[in-house]
Image 1 (cartoon, helix red, strand yellow):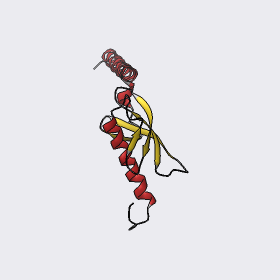
Image 2: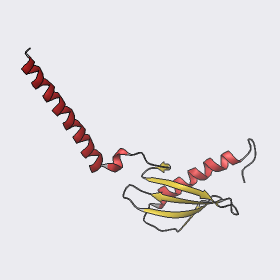
Image 3: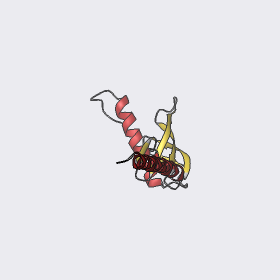
Image 4: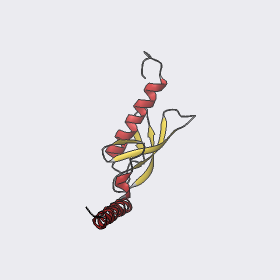
Length: 119
């Protein structure tokens, strides 16, 4: 192999490397939502995040829910019976209720002492 053919091979390799990096950058810019993980707690197509609990009403949960179609809203849930307020909105209520029930179940289990009865 001569020095000229080695130089050409090195140039082809570097051009291919730059093309690969450029393609990866364009894909990240074109599809940014697919590259990042979903935050919070997800059930089906709906995810919940920014969870907060009221200090006075410990059974009340406030959260932000969003779906894959970029619908977002804030809801309030009564963890005692699972009632969601508001009852109608852009995010599917069945999945939003499932996210809320799961979070209520996880937090109430962690706050109760082992063996204590549930009310």
